[in-house]
Length: 386
Image 1 (cartoon, rainbow, N blue to C red):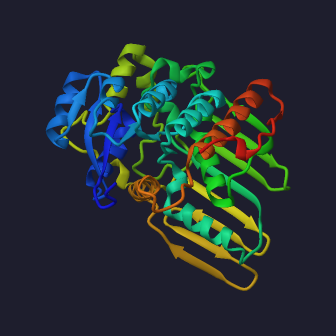
Image 2 (tube, helix red, strand yellow):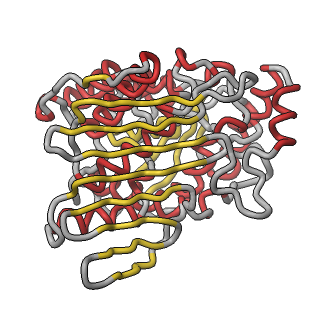
């Protein structure tokens, strides 16, 4: 294996996630997009022209391409398991968009297939790859300020009022924000303080718009056996965090989505996909200013917001500027992915990590439905294969 050669990537699915990630894969010196899989003929033709790659009508067909070393699975969540397993059966490494799958069982199936095939599985890119989050991980793991004791993550977006597929609006079909957005928050917590399983999750869901019947907000408390605790707050109703000029969840958007049919809304969602316009989308350049993370260590507090990490101890306050754009997160995710596959570094966001994120979020789904705290069955981490 030549470690100097770019990693050859096949892209499964060209939806919104790919619209943000594929341009950064194409720009990186460490990766080269050699194939895409999409049933949309027009999309395939544009990808071939712009990326200089081959196109396939199915993921299974693309996985048989000998030039593909890694398959980036960016298809709808319910297809992650099938497409990841197809890639692993063909001897490919896998990068899966979050969440890893819709159930813990599917995550464990993917991880088991990866072990049998001797291939790497990585999950992301997620907010756990933001440079600010990784800096907090470095500080927390140094031991300089003692152990992490508490963590709070507050996030917000206009998730509810973006065009959605019908199944994304139905909570029992994994619609709503818990698996889609809580996975980002749990990812940040696990990245910063180290991978661990909560013993219980208590989640209060918010469903405030009968025209968009999904869980659109929540507050969740994660309790861990070592007395560490995390609180996660999220709203997808497009109000908090909006600044002058933003259209997050604007009234006009809400009214428009209430008038259109499911088919029209799906068409609108397709318009946010990769190459739906005239060329590369620039969305990954925007700053990740949608989250605030506070970690209380025994001897200091760390605060992540916008483009900085603050470290506050009893004697001083230090502000460290960081590039917290999605593009910077993608670069770090690509570095981790290539480093793991080329044998240059250890994985952070591997199959074990992705499984524990889904295990935690699944407990949140159950807690929200039952209106009670849910105990998370203890699973020794060594039993979850990477």
